[in-house]
Image (cartoon, helix red, strand yellow):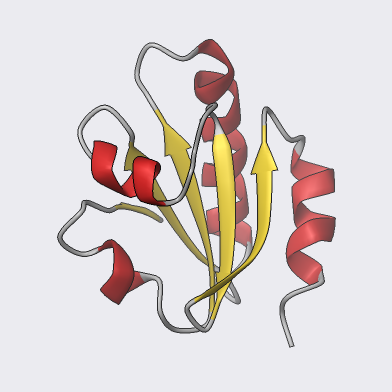
Amino acid sequence: MVEALTEKNFEEETKDGVVLTDFWATWCGPCRMQSPVIDELAEERQDVKFTKVDVDENQSIAKNLGIMAIPTLIIKKNGEIVDRITGYTPKEKLDEILDQYVD
């Protein structure tokens, strides 16, 4: 399951383990392509927490993280950003990237 985060709970919900956050917006075509990929991976991988942030509703998070384009995927490990991917990313590629950060 992909959990929707807000400005109120982003830091708390992404501080432990490996967390992928999808920064998206409803009007973004590539975001709509990325979303099913994230949903599939969330069903398949129990070793990663999958979250999403609507940048229109949570502008301060996007601003603080310097997100200039969407979709942007941020991977955090134990609260530290370890990777940032901008643009649509196919499932196989994203799976490989995540493997780098899981112990």
